[in-house]
Amino acid sequence: MENTQLEYLLTCTTAKDMWDKLTSIHEQKSASNKLILLQRFHEYRMNPSESVVQHVARIQNLATQLKDVGENISKVAVIAKILGSLPSRYNAL
Image (cartoon, rainbow, N blue to C red; front, side, top):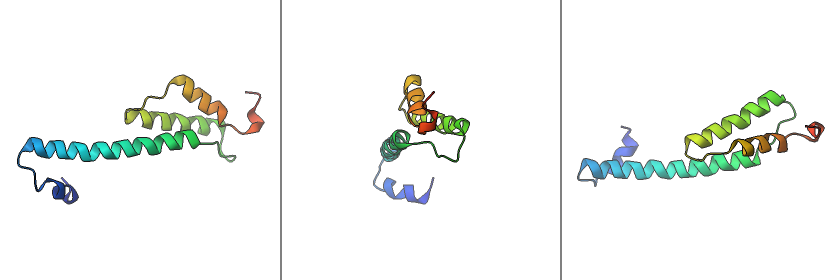
């Protein structure tokens, strides 16, 4: 356990109190992390210097990260994001 986490546990009297306290601390970080990832996902646009393969991989990676924090993004939403965030030269897609 890290020293920074010990500060939060000084007032706990049982192992359950400690576990509950640590859970609440880490769940807050997960909630803020989820919001940051959602923002990145929705604001992401393809960089003109990257390939379509890199673009697709980045969006799939963001979707996987969101899934890991409990925010499932549907396949349709991922596909829509991929197509919607391409530069205008790919409009034929």
